[in-house]
Amino acid sequence: MEITSGGTPGPRLADRLAVRGNNVYGRLPHAPRVKVLAEMFVRAGWRARASSWTEYEVEHEWVCIELVEPSPDERLFSGVVDPSRVDELGAVLAGLGLRYSIELWSDDGTSLLRELAG
Image (tube, rainbow, N blue to C red; front, side):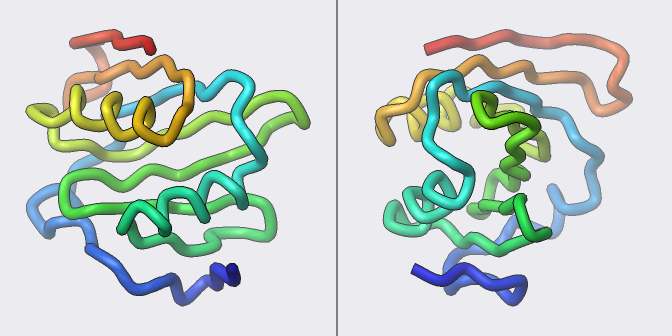
């Protein structure tokens, strides 16, 4: 599957969330390469785009996360999620067969609101 900088068809982040700063950060231990992760999200009905040679952005109406691979063994993500749907993000990751840890932060980035793991 080819994922270009123009992106694949699929849902876009809602405008009301697009103006927010990053509020979600996470780790995907033992996950496949980020290109494979992006393809998994596309097959699940999400939109994806290549945001650099090695990073991918995946999004739905309620979440937009950047998938990065800082080392061959590590997959991280950061972005924006509707705070009321952070549990749904965990469910999506679990549904893709991924282990995860998620941190939800306040809009100003000063307070950790929730931590989830699965």
